Length: 337
Image: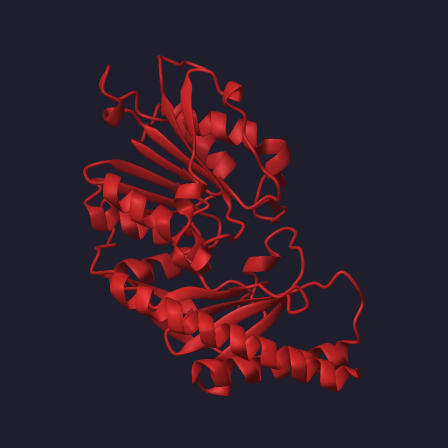
């Protein structure tokens, strides 16, 4: 089979798969009030795409193949898959954005790759989030964190919340919308903190200078050190670091496989001890990582109850898919480490 015939056959396979998935998922999405969800995640090995629906548009990515392919041929193939997706979903071809993604190092997944300036507002229940479909590898809203956003919203009322590596602050929005007493969002990027402020504004959440919702541009490692010196504490801390970062704005590079223990330990030291004997009043750390094969052992952090939350992060559009590692930490006894 020549390459054109092979591409046509794969486009038909993708059309059939997307049509079936869309028929199934749109009913679920309508029922729970979401309009951004995953349609396809490398379901067919020879079509290594991830395809996400955002209302009337698609943002997706081609993952690097295990073999070399002519660049021009790859572009033709990707265009054919985009045409197939548009036809299957009944969308305009110009609103299908498929980018090429390789294993990322540093902050490259967050760097601008285009100037299309195609934005949408998407819904999760009564919350709204601003996403960019054209200009970055990632849209500004991680769909595989949907359940985490929901769980955080359910438990953050009246709590002091710290969101580290906050990105576009979607988790901060959920905490603030729940009635959190304070929400601090820390990130090195003014671009993403401004995006976070826009997400707050979309949801009618006050971000003026007197607000209890603060946006802090700082290296997380430096912020944690200063917070410890000031004896600050939070009831909920969210730690969702990149797997690797060597940003020039940071004091040192970050490799989560090397540095996770120190990062987690520094966060645990900032958790509120809560009310003795009441687990629901104790501070909680939410830690997640996209590092391949990442796993924590309970004995690494004595004095804390560690719960693996990965299975609880699964949603209808993510069933059977590889999800980020996700753990919660709650103090089980006095820990002054």
